[in-house]
Image 1 (spheres, rainbow, N blue to C red):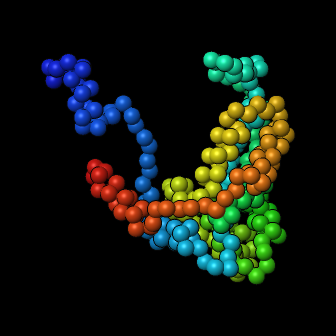
Image 2 (tube, one colour):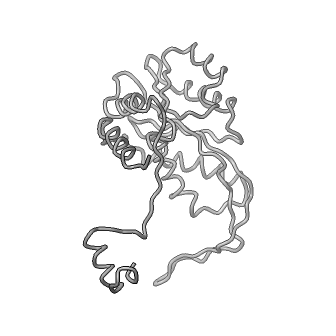
Image 3 (cartoon, rainbow, N blue to C red):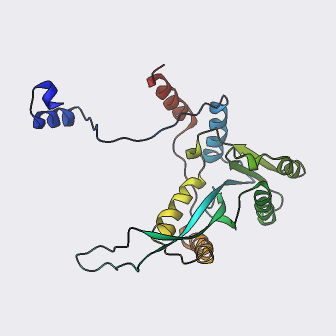
Length: 243
């Protein structure tokens, strides 16, 4: 750019800084094409910001294909003046998946480790949630549009339990599901630095992390951005797109 404009690289950097331009940075986005986007956002944000009384609200999703990774050599611990280190390569020892239900009002998590994420496993997890659900309260479940969440077997089970209500997020809008934030904590605090010599080791760590979270870290979830602002931001993004 400096060569094209006939100025020095230093001048280019000064202009970029003055204009708050950062062309070296790039972030990703995806705008939902769901025709009921606004309706679903209003519904789910309403549950977060104005939860109904006498009800439990759960944000549910599955974290699939979690890898049991072991390093090819033991890591070197941190010491004075030196960060901890580990080998860049690893050994794969299999995978597992985790179903999680994040309670919006308490921050506690119900989890279930599963080898697969079919409708059968999802229905089993719903039964686990139902067994632990306080009697006499409505149960609102926020979840995504995974096909396993909408099978005939799941819907038949749901029809027999009118106190359970499904709220589906818009397509391409996983950010609206509160449990995704908890999955990020799991990844950062338990999996990223973890060393797992077997799938069983990984399963035990997932169960341990849920127990520690519920005992020491759980707190009510706070959503701060109202539906009107979210919808307006998406509309601005659409207007900025070419064509």
